[in-house]
Each structure stands twice: as C-alpha cells, then as structure tokens.
Length: 109
Image (cartoon, rainbow, N blue to C red; front, side, top):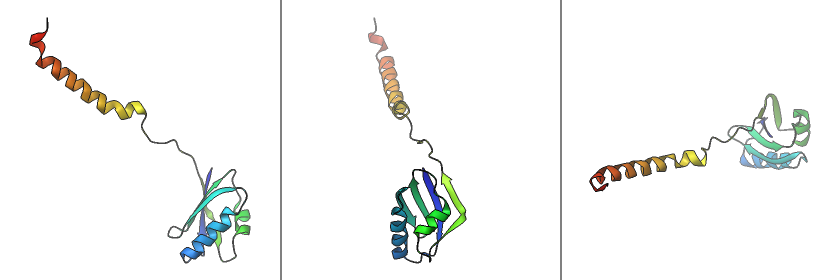
C-alpha cells in the first residue's frame, strides 16, 4: 500500500535525503521517496502508519501535516491487453488480404 504524506521544514536536497533516510529506517516502511519541490513523501508500507508514529522518527525541524495525509489506492494498469495491442496489425493484415483477393479475382476458378 502507498501512503502519501505532506512534509514541512525541508529546505535543500540534504534535508530531503535526511528525511528519506529517516523514513526508510522505520521497520514497517518498505521504501520511501521524498520530493522537495512538492513537499511530499511517498511510502510503500505494509499497513497504514499513524502520523504521530512517523513524526517520532523524524527530526524536530521536520513536521508532517495531518490534513494532507492520504492513502493512494493501487489502481489497475491502463496498459491495453495483448489483443488490443495487436488489433491495428490484424486490421492491416485484413485490408491487405482483401485488396489482394479483389485484385486477383479474375484468376479465381
């Protein structure tokens, strides 16, 4: 499950890296990535982690805003199926075959 949090107090890439390392040090967090420009952290977690617990693992100068906390649902991929990917190829093959048959209809028995 992905958990997205809003983080205040980061001013440089060193801060971003520090927050990322502190979040990855939490046992329940599989991976953590932090964006300095968006002031957001995306955590891959096994179960939802309370804001207070996350805050305990960060230095005091970094604060997590509770109102911006949300859980991102895992959405199915929008990638088309193999059949949908091959549909244009089948259409081209159909048109070439049809045109070939129509051009050579005089040779039919």
